[in-house]
Length: 108
Image 1 (cartoon, rainbow, N blue to C red):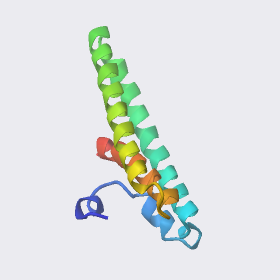
Image 2 (tube, helix red, strand yellow; image 1 turned 180 degrees about the vertical axis):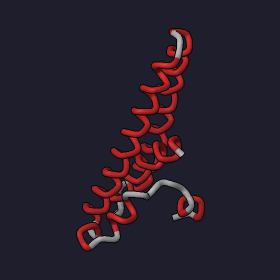
Image 3 (cartoon, one colour; image 1 turned 90 degrees about the vertical axis):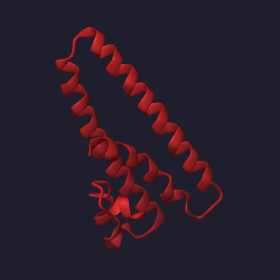
């Protein structure tokens, strides 16, 4: 983990989960990151809905466009890391981690 990630809100769920006896295996670690991703996605969805309610129709369209652009960025970034990990023993657990990081960074 890079130094910046250690100071980030990311890994509030995944790190404690991985450090339990049940989180040590590759598939267990992947599940820990999936739980982290779901938590951050939920927070982002709540923030999006709250902001959406405050905006006029023109701002709502811009918010929607911005959100779609961010999702495309997230998917491209995660696809890159997925390709990078392909063929290694790391693939069961490394792929979920990049999908959890962008929502966490966006919330913090």
